Length: 351
Ligand SMILES: NC(=O)c1ccc[n+]([C@@H]2O[C@H](COP(=O)([O-])OP(=O)(O)OC[C@H]3O[C@@H](n4cnc5c(N)ncnc54)[C@H](O)[C@@H]3O)[C@@H](O)[C@H]2O)c1
Ligand SMILES: [Zn+2]
Ligand SMILES: [Zn+2]
Image (cartoon, rainbow, N blue to C red; front, side):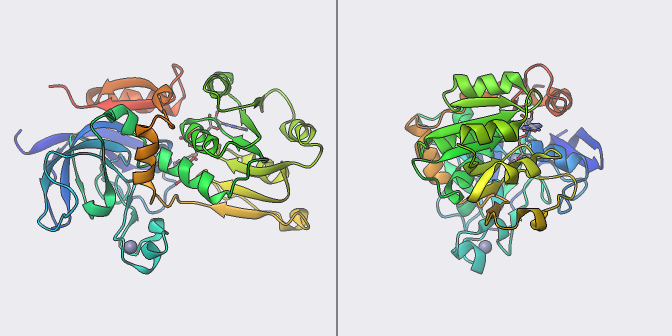
């Protein structure tokens, strides 16, 4: 079928399918079309699948973390040209509105998280990327697609989280969740060299990975002990200076504020599938600062430099790399955390 391609489509609550879809075309002069060379499945795709992302639209092609080669560029695209290898930002933003000018690109009045959520994304053979001058990052020749793949989403998220946490060298930091986003958060935290990093997960495998990668000084398995007590012991009874909530399961928000010391900063990266309560009555006097996101993915050029210089290396996260043909199996494995999966990476469809 000419002018058709394979793509992963969100069919409504609980269902994704690999379907034939028309090839994307330029719609606005600031668009490009990208031939996708690598894409990933993200836990946020699962949140869409579960119907817990209110902004997501049915029948949208999923995928908001991908790299590729520009095959068509609108006449208004200034910074990129056909043939460029690029990584794509999870957020679509204009760069000029009230929010963009202040760096809050997640709340751009013309965009935000659009790709793979409200407009067709990158779990496909081709994708249209709007507002390309803001949405793309050039991949240097000495950076592989694999190394650049997470630039626009989970790495942007980890980098943002570390930035907004206002880390100090003597800090004791707790990261709840050593999934792919937690690992990217840890890699970004390492750039600030805080004194002690405590990583909490329920997966021994993931905790060991964090340790092996030199990202954790102490690992705690939440299934095996009382995390709150352990962290108080490790911090002279005070609690941690900075806490990152990157687990997103029931109860981890509560752990996050409980293990924080008075006047700590708690960064909530996780996207919850159910309402979470903030019991201000119990927190009274702790004087906590909470930062929540929606990553503002506006540092992708900086992140690419860190990747190029070897200061950030996400290669340990790629556990599975299979063609688009096998993506539905990929969703099953990724969703159920089978086969030691951390990141399921999608290579182009094989005919
Ligand atoms: N804010 C953003 O813009 C943004 C961007 C990307 C991802 N996210 C969100 O971040 C969260 C994490 O994403 P991920 O890709 O790493 O997903 P993930 O599901 O792989 O990671 C969650 C981790 O938490 C662990 N966990 C489960 N229960 C726990 C507990 N009680 N204590 C500690 N850890 C526990 C899991 O074993 C897993 O390793 C998701 O909610 C995702 O949607 C947010
Ligand atoms: Zn994502
Ligand atoms: Zn804007």
